[in-house]
Image (cartoon, rainbow, N blue to C red; front, side, top):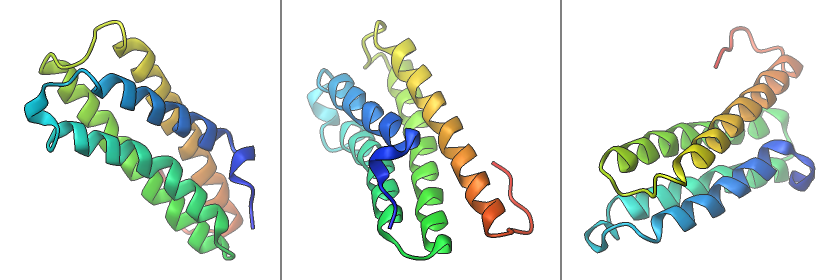
Length: 126
């Protein structure tokens, strides 16, 4: 079993989750069951899947949960972009959130690639 707290990808994903919860506090009330909820679920999904993957015994299961986390990170990035274009975000939060999401995606992608190399994956690119 791996220790998720030692992974930079987890640290970043956790920071993004906190940033997203803060950023969505000011969203319109009519979005509480829409974009606010979707973004919060995606934001929590990223670190949660990293944690769950770390708890798995096999490398292939670990890789699968990292891939799910990456998918959620990309989903969140789109949703944040949409919320920004709709004028829901505080413009002061946008650069920090965007840069933290990009860094999370890059670190998670590198972790996936290195894990895949250990498994001798035939073809893999993110």
